[in-house]
Image (tube, rainbow, N blue to C red; front, side, top):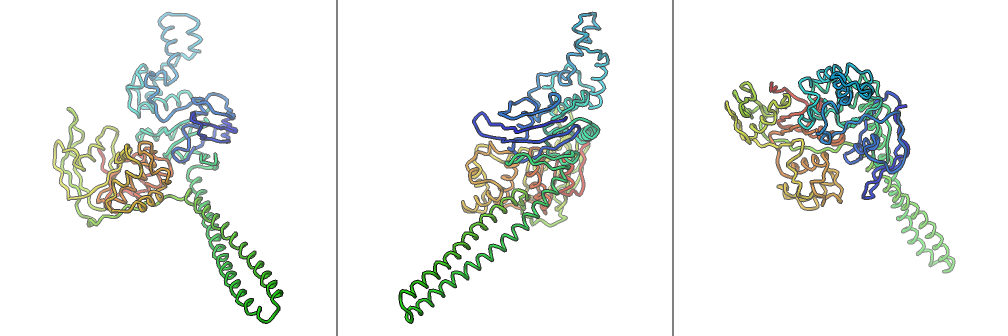
Amino acid sequence: MGLIVRSLNYVHPDNAELFHDLNFILNDGEKAALVGINGAGKSTLLRIVSQKLELTSGEITYPEIPWYVPQHLGEFDTWSVAQALGADKKLHALHAILGGDTDAQHFSQLDDDWDIENKVKRVLEKWELGHIHENRLLGSLSGGQKTKVFLAAMDMNSPNLILLDEPSNHLDIKTRMKLYTMILQSKSTMLIVSHDRTLLNLMNKTLELNEKGIEVFGGNFEFYQQKKMEKVSALRARLNEQSKALKESEKKATDMASHRAQQESRSAGMSASIPRIIAGGLKNKAERSTARMLHAHEEKIATLLHSIEETKAQIQEYETLKIDIKAPELNPGALLIDMAAVNFRYGDRLLWNNLSFQIKSGERVQIEGENGSGKTTLLKIITRELEPFEGSYNSSAFSYFYLDQDYSMIDPKLSVYEQIQAYNKRGLEEHELKELLVYSQFNPAAFDKKCAGLSGGERMKLSLSCLLVSNQAPDLLILDEPTNNLDIQSLEVLTLAVKNFEGTLLVISHDDYFISEIGIDYSISLT
C-alpha cells in the first residue's frame, strides 16, 4: 500500500474552504506529479498528507509517516546537517560508546549501525557536500546546499513514501541530473510538486488539483498535456456544433416572427368577409400556436447561448493564454553589444577571465555559469547599472525590458489596476485597460487587489501586460531566471510569449525545457 486519500476536506482558519471531498490513490512504487495553478493548494495538500497541517475531515492511509521536503527550508536553519540526515542520535551514541560510555541506551540508539559515520561521509560526498561538517547548521548554507542535504537524507534513508515540494529549485544542472537518477532508481512511492517539466516527465501518474477536486491522468506530464489538448479539440468541436445550432434556432425564430406578422396581416383581411366571432376565434388560435412555437425557440436560443458561454470558459481553462510582445524596428544583424576583455571585481576576487563577446540584433543568447559566477552582474553591466572593473563595453542605443524571477518591476504597494495604469504610455481608456486585464486572466474582483498578494504567475502576466500598454517594442528582452516562481500554466504563457518574440533575447535560466522551447542561437559561458 502506498498512499490512500479519502474524502479529504480542509477549511482555512478564516472558514474559507480549500478542499472538498478529495480522493486519490498511489500504489506502491508509483511516482505522481501534483499539478495545478498557483493558489490551488498543492503545497497545502503535501503538508496535510505529511501531518504538518491538520485536515478538517477525511482519511489518509499510508504504511508510515511520509518523508517530506518542503519548498522553503528556512524552518530548519537551527538544525545541524546530521539532524537533517536523520543521523544525529546514532552519531551521538557512537561517539559516546567509542569514548568509553557503555550505557545500554547508547547501544539501543545505535541499533548495530556501526558504519553510520562512513554512511554520512559517503552520502555527503555523493551530493558534493563532503567539505561540510555534520555539525554545521543549515542556516549557514546556501539554498542549493540546503536542498542537497535533504536530498542526501532521502538517498541515505530510502523511505517508503516521499513528498517533495519543488525539489529542483536552486539546483544546478549537475545536481538536477543526480536528482533525476535517484528518482528513476528509487522504489519509493512519491508525490512531487514541481514546475520542472523534465522532472515531471519522469512520473508515471499526474494528479491535477483544480476547483472540482483531483483529476487523475495515468501518465507523465507530456501524456497529461496531450490529454488536455484532446480535451480542447473536443470542446472546440462541441462549440462549433453549438454555434451551428444557435444559427439555425435564430433563423427559425426570425422566420417564425415573420410568419406571425404575415398571419396577422391575413387575419385582418379575412375579418371583412367572415363573421367577427369566427374570425376572432381563428386569429386567437393561430396567434397562440405561433406564440408557443416562438417561445420554445427563444428558450432554446437562451439555453444554447448559456451552453456556448460554458464551453468557451472550459476552453479558456485548458488553452494557453497568448501574449504577443511587440517586435522592435532595429535592423537584424546590427551590432548591439560589444564586450572586450571585460571583468568585474568583488572584494579581491575577479569574476571572469577577460570576458569578450558580441551580440547582434535578433540573436537569442543564453548566459551560462554556476552559482556565484556573475551571471546577474553581467546583465547589470549590459544595462549599465554597473561599470566594468576592466575592459571596454560599447553598445548601440537600445531599449530593453528586464524580467527577473521576482518580477520586481511590479510595485507591491499598488493595486493591479494602478500597476497597469502606471505603464499606460499608449493612453488607453479605463475600460480598455480592464479588458486587457481580463484577457490576461485577471477577473474584475482582482483589479483592486494589492500586487503584494499576487502569485508568481500573476506577477508575470501583469508584467507582460504592462509591457503591452507601455508602447514599447524592446530591442532587447532580458530574462533572469524568470521561471522560478511560476506554476505550469503560467510557465507555458511565458514560454509562448518569449518563443514568439522577434527581437534580441538574453536569458539566464536553469530550466532546460524552457531553454529548448524558446530557441537559443548560442551560449556565453562564465567559467
